[in-house]
Length: 146
Length: 146
DNA sequence: TAAAAACATACTACTGTGATAGGAATTGTA
DNA sequence: TACAATTCCTATCACAGTAGTATGTTTTTA
View 1 (cartoon, chains in turn orange, blue, purple, red):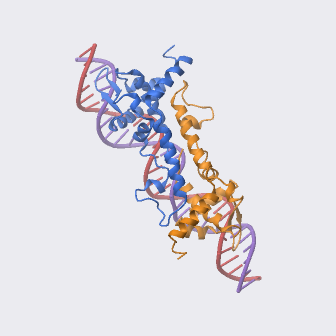
View 2 (cartoon, rainbow over the protein chains, first blue to last red):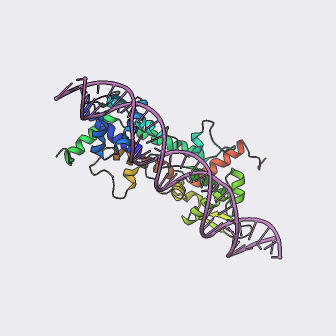
View 3 (cartoon, each protein chain N blue to C red):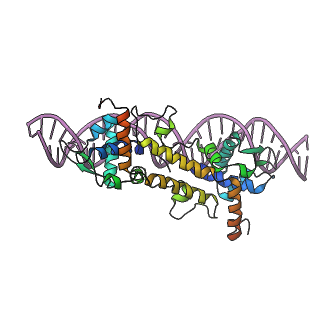
């Protein structure tokens, strides 16, 4: 299991898209706001589109919009779209179960770890984060907003 | 944050060492029991020794022994010795906090994730796992034990 | 003295991450 | 209709980390 910059960047962008409502946000706009390499962000948004998290609007004045209401998109869905399934180790990753031929006690711990992570990630939605972000922006506005 | 084969292998070996009590288990013995590449395991045990988890007994009939009672060694200590600190993303990894100049709502989620993982890992000890393993071995013994 | 073991160090193959590059297709707007 | 803004597509790359392998050296017991 791993959490990398892909999730970090992706979530930042999606919170911004969620705040935009119906009007699409372009990859360039998002990359400037959050200092994310533009071309890299394009790839992340493509992955999120493939996963059905966002919808793309092509052409001038286009960009990305959420494919469903922000309250129905969990952080887990975002992370799994960008990083693959949440599985903590070799033991839990293999569909056939443990690599070890004999049963090992450690496997149960790995299972509890991934359950805990999935629990945290699935309990937060983009709507929650967009709300939090609004409050944070009110306290310390960014350059663009000042 | 990542959980790799290092933790997997390391835990398997430590559970076995814990079961051995005062008599040292050699790296070779452990590597054969759990099908872990011998030289790779030596490196892991060296890291665990540096972290103060195990004590080494050099020379013939030597091996490794736990440095403290099994009930006082948490899985978290083992994982951190082998993988480095549990931090879920760039945001939480940097000592200075978030990479973003502006505050981001996503950071709170990453924090909750690492807290949850640490919670699971620190709530299990080597003594717990050694007990579980004993029970598993009783049900389906390994080749060596048959 | 010989074997068994830890200890040390260096090397290698492979994979994933975090990009960068260059264009092609699509679409609103002047 | 031209143009600019945008998504879309594919390829490439540098770097770091993982999972080993290799070759010894030191220490200790039998």
